[in-house]
Length: 412
Image (spheres, one colour):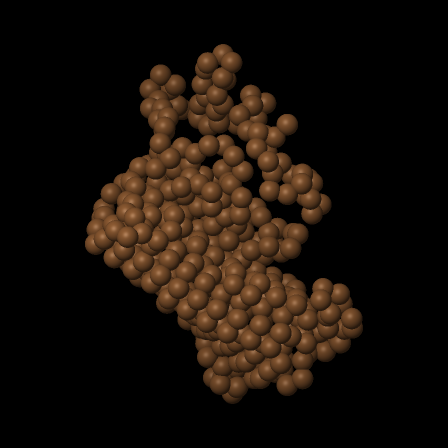
């Protein structure tokens, strides 16, 4: 019997994976432990060189360390929190749900306006790092390090939120549906963050009028699928610009992507981004009237761009370099296709026409008007994706994407 209901029937979607916590049989290597509730003992397998008699054991009892909470009529205002180190929280052992969003944070905010959080270190927490519970406006979170979290990193959404220059890594330790930076809202900025070592998506920040710019994202999607380095749900008039996504593995199932606009995303722009080492740089699903332009996608092996149940997409001035074949699914969703350069090392191109999710016909050729010549990078193997003077990309007026501008501009 499960201790709490599962989000889907066990075994749904053909998944046969599960986790059993806190059993002696689960101790297979040094550094692991379990709590023997019957014998009232804590059993620990020491790491090499550790003296059990000299260990410091911290057993957290609180889910939140710092809580700032006002009311709707009298929000907490103009508070600055800077330079604190917060560690060691607990959570109930229940299913986290999507994004592990049911858990609170070491820092918890509700009905907060005009507050700033800078230079915080949050580490070794069982739930989320920084979490908002509604009613949050004009809040800035910058220069923080969030690491070693059982759930997610920065979960703050609302109106006019700024999440800038933070280092989020090592999230999803206990709840793999967790995300590095999550929530959404209106007219918010997520910029110059570095997010990595994530079991699911690095950034998921939907809503209206949000700008996701110059973030460095890598080694996310290490356990789950149907996500991306940047995953946007119901994003309206949002901009993804100047981001770098690299080394995102394909974990099977519904796949992993670099940039993903999901259901009800519309009138948004994906421009000037770089994807390296991601087999599916673009995945768009049930999205309409969006623009994808001036991006560079580098794939070792076969590459896929997928647009199931999408409509009215514009793709212009994008560069895709794949050492293998290139496959574009639901190519009919792309109504404007202009000045793109797609190079396949094998010369293999497949266009798939779909109705709903069903393939109706395929065309073994690049889309009309596509340049298929080698773009002639300065040093692709060395990560220099500028174009040589004789590059066809330069002749087409394609803009090189400079990765150095993404990520943190200063510590932590």
